[in-house]
Amino acid sequence: MYVVRTGAACKCRVALNGVRRYSRGMSATENAPPAAALPILIVPNPVLRKTSRAVTPADAAAVRALLPKMFATMYKAPGIGLAAPQVGKLLRVVVMDLQPDKVPAPMVLINPEIIAASEEKATREEGCLSLPDQYADVTRPAWVKVRYQDEAGAKQEIEGEGLLAACLQHEIDHLNGVLFIDYLSALKRNILLRKLAKDQKERAKK
Ligand code: NI
Image 1: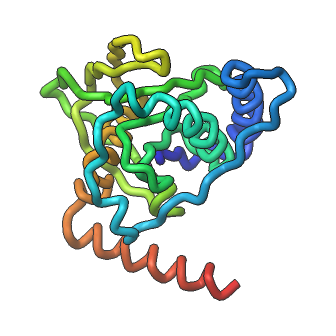
Image 2 (image 1 turned 90 degrees about the vertical axis):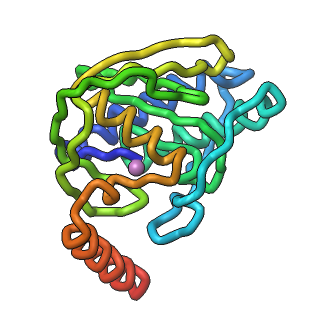
C-alpha cells in the first residue's frame, strides 16, 4: 500500500467516487453492492515477506473477484496503491489510483515487471498501510517502464517518473516481499519499526 501523507481527508472523498465508478464497471448489475474492504496485513506479518506467484489464466475468476475488494480496501484506507499480498493473497496483482487532478483513475496491473529504469535517482517520502503512520524518504530510480497485463489479460506498458514511478516500484516490491523500509539505513529502519510496534501496542489497548 502506498499512501501519501498530505490531503488524506480530501482524497477519501474522491476515492469513494472511485469505488462507485469502479464498481459500475466491474459489476454485472448497476445496483450491485460495493465490495467490502479486506483487512490489511501489518508488519511484521510474515506473509508480507513472501514472494507472490504469477497470475495464470486459471486464476481469472479469483482475480476478478479479488479486484473490487482490493479497490475497496485501497480507497477506504485511503491509499493510492495496494498489492495483493497486503491482503493476504500471494498473487502478482496490484491496484493503483494516483487520482491525477483529483479525478479517480483506477489501474489494475497483473504480473507487472520493471523492464527499464533510469540511472537517475529521485528521493520521495513514502508510507505504506502495512506500516501505518510511518513515513521515510526513499531513493529509487527516477523513471521506470513497466510491462503488465490489464484485467482483460492484454499486454500493456506504462512509463513514468515522479509519484507514478515511486508507486509502481513500491507496489512491485510488495510482490517480491520487499518493503520501503528495506531501503533505509539499519538505524532508521529500527527506529521506525520500534515506533510502529509501540503504536500498534497502544492501538490494541484502545
Ligand atoms: Ni506499501
